[in-house]
Image (cartoon, rainbow, N blue to C red; front, side, top):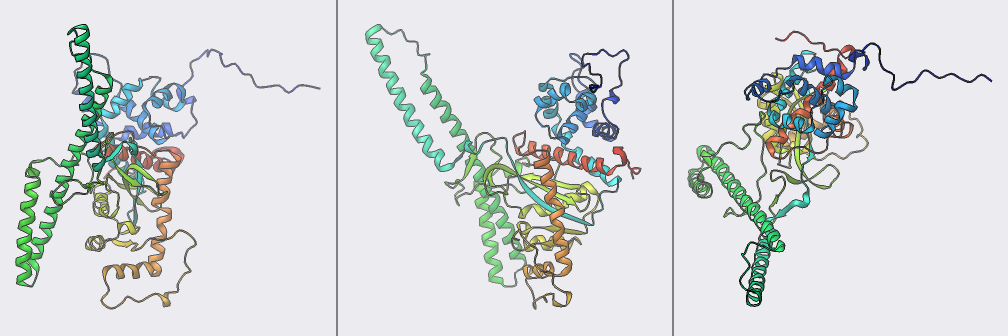
Length: 507
């Protein structure tokens, strides 16, 4: 019987003619697309920062190459600088993009860290590229949020009550250890002579002193944050009272409101006298001004006993994720275009509830995409009369759920003739509930299932981005922008024929 012949296989075969790198990847590969995109991006902020450095010394890697490698890596679910560096050897596409160069992982980490703000700003450019390809129409945008784990363990968080107790315990233990050390020194001096120079600090004592210093630092920072948060809340109360004093028809009520407003201002100034001189906490992240979590505080400004602070990433907070688990995390927001699933606005903060995110994130759409959406859908976490009124004032047809929707079979369709009538003089909540129960309202709200929810699945499951690589609120906002920018580039790649960048002329 004739044996079947195999195709020639010689992995060590030397090439007589050097192959072209483009022979390594099939036509229409994502790597080619990323290189085309990088040619379209404005990287002047990174280029200027590189050129501003001393020209002497080791030559830097080309910024376009480094940006292309990072974008491709984030797009394909590789976020670790060590894994990215390894991919320049082991992954054909990454090796092709790097042009056969192999930056060490510390160079990759330093480039990403040094230019994190400029890399985060590429999100806006990615949205505009999608708009030029016809993927951004702003007919309907859906807003949603997801909890992304911080680069910190929840077990490294401590409550204010626990801090005070541990501080007292450690202080007592340190005093006891010092007494024991003094007694031992006295005994040794009596027996052997005074030869101990005092430099031999017991390791047990050193460990407790280090722990005590760490707790005291965190306790002090938590107290300051709570005091400033309480002062900010008092100023907000004063603003509302001043508005009441200016508009209330009753003279007695106006006088009372004015008196209370003045008192709130005095109390706030006593707690935080330098607030006007402080720089904005989130003014350098290049995105919307988002709500910040305030540690629960007593009227005196002292943190409540359950107020917590994480030693590793103090900006992060313990939150409940979609599965009901408590995680150390940030709340990441995305406004998503219907149909194309392009993210048109982003935001990240440490405020767990979604309610306060609607206005700043939706307003950001105008900055990235050039206009506000015609219609908006959002779940019950975003409901408030103020949010509904804000959308109405800007001509946005908003569909915001007023109650939690159970997952399961859809309710039976209701004929137009049976649609519920609005009650006489309805409240904003009743008005929105009736709007959602209408035929158009049900059709619009159903679109949420295919608009923002799949996007978070693609980011967290398909690309495995479930934890931030950076710590601190400003840094994680930039990284979330990079993640969302690469999500948009993947949508653009799949929409372009043959994987070739197809754009209409800018402007």
